[in-house]
Length: 407
Ligand SMILES: [Zn+2]
Image (cartoon, rainbow, N blue to C red; front, top):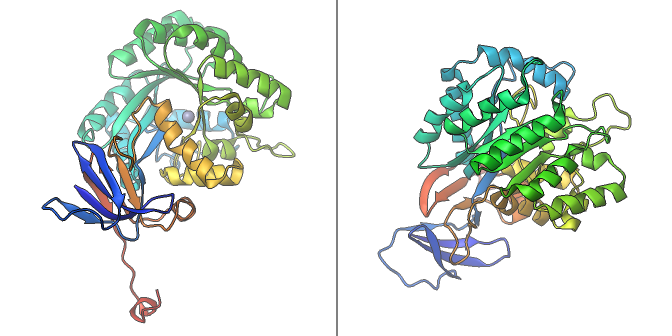
């Protein structure tokens, strides 16, 4: 496969040769010897590594119209969602998850980490239902499933509830997840989640401190446990770290860095849910600057889409990058690095992109620069996975403006 006339983010226009799933040559445009290879002209397109989504909730997606969250808070979303959850059968979960995955792939996403609820209310229904969707779409997208365990009933100890996590791993989940900070006994919940992961040798990805209350700092305990765990540990959200004094944020960021914990910030959902009723209203993002200064890998994800936790959301990492520029005070380049390469690192995926030797998971998007791509999120995209075109979206325009040759 030869991709010709592709613009790179550094401004070069190149031809890219792909073989055996890898990028094997990048040459100045027009310098490739003619051959009988399959060739695609990417003139007008920016070529970058494919997108990844490090944090989705594909069991909840597309339920915004079924569940109310009049308070607009995390607690409101959780209680609003319970009714939906109990009414969702396996076919419904599959239908919504499949629709979301197809949109993600069309946008250029070739790997997704999704949290799927399991536990007291849902049992293993979502994990088991999703397995069929994952298998069907395996040729197009790698999916990592996080068993997102919900709290047990009050009279059930975590030691027994941990069994649900183990059953979820046996049923196909890859990663141990949960919300220890919001449980009745956060320390016990976190210890149980870590123990299951260590015993099974699986990564951990927890929802951590999803609150602007600076007194809630379970992140410190997670860092202490992670230092001994021997498995990859990710702290998603870590919102309260953004609400503490700068010196304390630096101190905790150093602990997180020393423990090798990665952080995923989720601007869309946190901006929507956090700080309701507060004045002045906080942004609800983690302490990105402190974490990056300490050397922590900070990635960014989309989190919820069209559900009670986030009634909008485009299932497009370019939207996440754009939000990081606006609300996270990142440059476009910084936002891109957090949203794509850092997310790949958090998910333990090999590097990809138009660089010799890297995996040919690629996205060509009709844009004149990375800034254009992030700002405009153009619909016209060509997605390659391991060197094969898996999706191509082209839009057409018509009308007098176009017929007159003005656009
Ligand atoms: Zn989440």
